[in-house]
Amino acid sequence: MNPRPATVAGLGELHDWLLEHHGDTVDADRLPAIRTELEALAARHVPGAVVELGCYQGAMALWMRAVLDATGQRRREVHVYDSFQGLPERGAKDPDLFEAGYLRAEPDQVLALHERWGRTPPAIHPGWFADTLPGRLPVQIAFAYLDGDYYDSIRTCLAACVPRMAPGGTLIVDDYADLEANPRAWNGLPGVKAACAEYFAAPSPLEVITGAGDLALGRYTTPTTGTRR
Ligand SMILES: C[S@@+](CC[C@H](N)C(=O)[O-])C[C@H]1O[C@@H](n2cnc3c(N)ncnc32)[C@H](O)[C@@H]1O
Image (cartoon, rainbow, N blue to C red; front, side, top):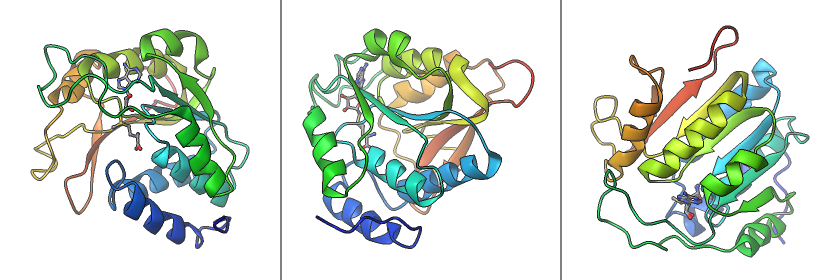
């Protein structure tokens, strides 16, 4: 087994290993961006759990667990959700890129990855978001990472998560692909941005996090007072 990266400095080894072995879903822009967001939670003392909606084999879940552990947030729970049957049938707003069932993974892969790195595994909630989220989300969410690729999946996740976000919490939407914010962004999943546009009333409260490459994550920060969108 690899040594546990219990310190911030120790995260470097995991970072490099993830890029080498899980470069299909995590990259050199995403890992530091998510790390920065999780570190900010501790600094702002935001209460609640971390959730990942669309965890696939668990690469980002492992990274989030390791960052939390290395930044004084060992007690923060991580919950992950996935069909473990891959992508559903695409909807009218999604591109004809992938067959239903693409990106199929197993809960055991998530467990094995955490075991390999000596990390506490997340709570795993297998099933379609529409079935699992209504009854199985934590009461309070500090950080939500939405990576469900399709319009319906993202709409379902937003409707379930936003009302549970802690004041000052952060919700990240992967594949947001705002070409104005980052002309290099990969715009292969336009249903994601369309779902955000329909869920959040204009003007959009989402900021865009960019990186050196094609990254364009949407970030919604929950108001600390007043009404949530
Ligand atoms: C791009 S992968 C997630 C990658 C992962 N976040 C990572 O960084 O390693 C998208 C995942 O979303 C899941 N997914 C998409 N729509 C879903 C839905 N409606 N219900 C459950 N899972 C869904 C798929 O099964 C797939 O594993």
